[in-house]
Image (tube, rainbow over all chains, first blue to last red; front, side, top):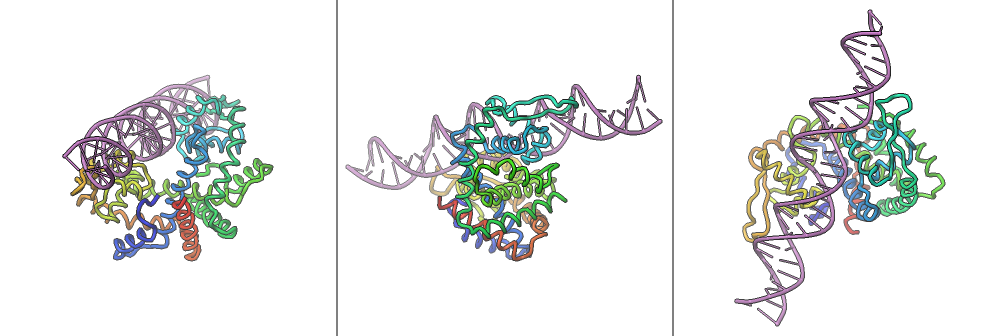
Length: 165
Length: 165
DNA sequence: GTCATTATATTCGGTCCCGAACGATCGCCG
DNA sequence: CGGCGATCGTTCGGGACCGAATATAATGAC
C-alpha cells in the first residue's frame, strides 16, 4: 500500500507539508487510515481468498449480500453492496454468466427485478466464506479482542453518522 | 451505504445466517466495517468536496501524493496511492489533460518518468484541501479525540501487519 | 379512466482498475 | 564491451464504477 515509504516517513512528510494550514490532523489520520486499511485489506483478500475463484471483490460482495439476505430486489442489493444501480446491472450480468445467480421478475411489480443465488452460487459461498473469514482474522491478528470491538464500534458510529447525513 | 436496512438489522441477519459456521465474528465485524466505512466516506467526500472540481477520488489521491511528496517517480506514486502502475498511467493521462500535473524524464535513468504538479494543480490542492479536511472532520464528528486516535492507531497496526505479509 | 408524477432497471460514455504481455533501458558479470 | 537478467512505464483486454439519460411501469389526482 505505502510502497517504499514507511508510515512514519509518510506522517513526517505530511506534517511538514501541511504544518502551516491549521488542519484537523486527528480527523485526517483517522479518515486516511480507514481508506488505506480498506485498500490494503481488499488487496490482501483478493490475492489470497478470491485469487482462484474467478470472483472480483465486488462480485464477491454482491454474492455475500444475496447470500445473507436471500432473494432480494436489485436496488436493495446495490445499496447493501455500496455500489450504484447502474454498476450492479453489469455485475449481475457477469455473475449470471458464471451461473452464480439468477434474475427473476418481481411477483407483483413488473418494474422490479429479484436476484437469488443458484445452487452453484450457494455452494460457492458456503465453501468460500470460512476461508474468507480466516483471512479476516489474519488481518486483525495484531489487535486485541477489545481493540477489535472498539474499532468496529467506532466505525459503526461513523457509518450511522454518514447514513443520517 | 446500507440502504434500507439498519446496521442492526444487518447484524441480526448475518448472525442468523452464519450462526452455525463457527466463525470469528469479531474479526468479521472489524473488517467489514472498515470496508463499509471506507466506501461511505469515499462517497461522502466525492459528493461534497470533489463534486464540482472535475476530480475523481483516485485522481485526487494521486494529486495528493504528488503534492505531499513533491516531484516523484511514477512507481512510488502508484504505491503510495494504492493503485497498480498500469492504472496510474491512465490516471496521469487524464490529469495531464486537465493540466494539473506534468511528466518529465528522469535525469539519469531513461526508463523512469517523473511526475510533478503544475502551478494550476498546486493551486487547486491548496484551495481544495482545507475543504477536504473540514469534511474529514465531519466524518469523525461523533468520535471523541481519544476514539479518533485509537481508531487511527488500530488501523495503523493492521496496515503495518499487512505490509509485512 | 386519463394524465401527470413518481419509481424502477437498463443503457451509455468516460474513467478507473488489475494483471499479463511488451518493448525499452539499465546493471552486472564475464 | 557484450550479452543477459532485472526493472521500468506503457499497452491491452476484461471488468468495475458513476451519473445522466432513457424506457417502462406503477401510483395518485381529478
